[in-house]
Amino acid sequence: GPVVDARGEGSGTGPRRRSRQTRQMIEASRILVALKDPDQVEELTALACMLAQAGKGKEILALHVIQIPRSLPLETELTAEIDVGEAMLAKAQAVAEERFDLEIRTELLQAREAAPAILEEAKEKGVDLIILGYNRRWRFGDRLLQATTLEYVVRHASCQVLLSVSPTKGA
Image (cartoon, rainbow, N blue to C red):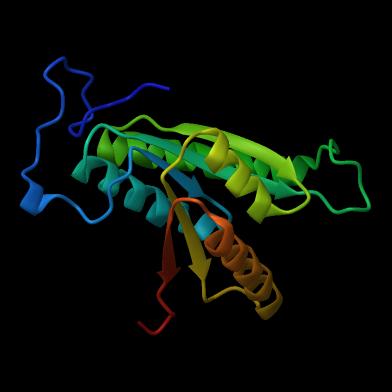
């Protein structure tokens, strides 16, 4: 995909060099944002874009995994889920473009389990930072499922993982 410098321009001058002292703790040339919750798309995409702009020219990949129940063939087209996934990815692209003047790549995957699919994609694309969201407002069952996904990714990722937890309602 296109690599854009810190100002979102493909200019030949390249990004400004930072002195060692001011360099960010998180240095990532390829960021994968795993999107699951429509409510968190803007927040997570913005986080990826801010990290991208804080460092060198970076590549951002927004990913949504549609989980296919074992009772169905893996290639089953779940139209409603596909629509939701595509809408989330389109929103991520819009946020990156309108707020940060960045171009991001998007990917919609179908898998039995989200976590291994996220890690597989990260490995394949040479990602060095995975951003995940966790929403405390989800119903208990959804929170449990998401916690399992997060734990799996954190435990097995071969790169840095950044977890963004949305604040509780009262905050």
